[in-house]
Length: 122
Image 1 (cartoon, rainbow, N blue to C red):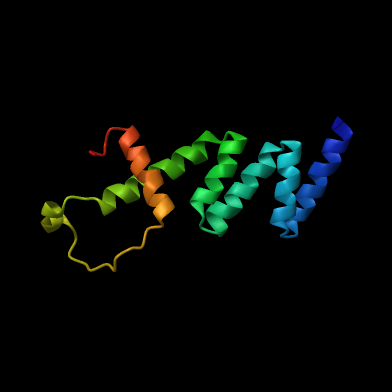
Image 2: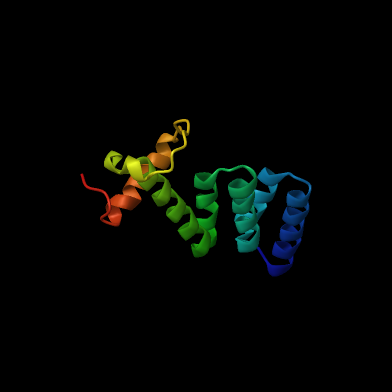
């Protein structure tokens, strides 16, 4: 694809994105390798749809290391909270929270990160 065609496609992708057609915009952004557009798709999934693992794929594709690190940190924090030692319950605030359902893929990814960082014992 030449530069002129790429620019026209990116404009079309931006138009689709701004009109809410994220699927069509995503295809164009990926086809053209338009990193800003790919990151915007990731942001849409992360912030608007609350789907960090889906957003991770787009951030990885665009090489957006700051967002990738943020997702990792949040997953590690969530896993640490879920796996916290029960003997420290007396140090926790005295409020009752309902149990949180963790998506199995999120749990697997967080456990892998903890294992890789040496923070999870087998």
